[in-house]
Image (cartoon, rainbow, N blue to C red; front, side, top):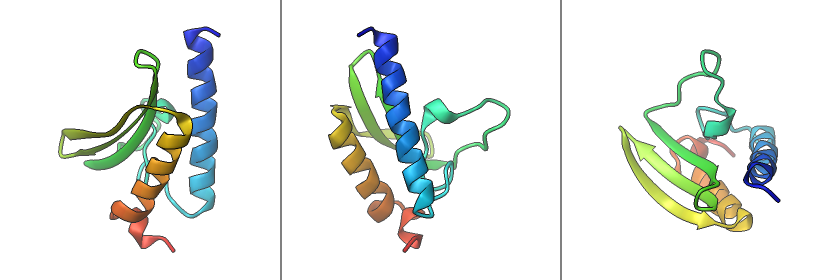
Length: 103
């Protein structure tokens, strides 16, 4: 498998997670952020505080992070999909002020 295959597979997993989160009432680019889904000039700008998840092919693995007012804090580096997914869901539904407003 090539690096681009890994990236494509990771983006499909992230897209499925985005769909799952939206189906639970969360709002993309408000409650959660996935950089690979940004369409320049079309996607809304993320808030000053974001909880993000992305695949890093150089690491390789998934990264979960929090950015507030330009300060980035990595919550998980080089994690497996299962680790990153679980941490990301927990983070945006319990720690994020945006996720807490959801049932």
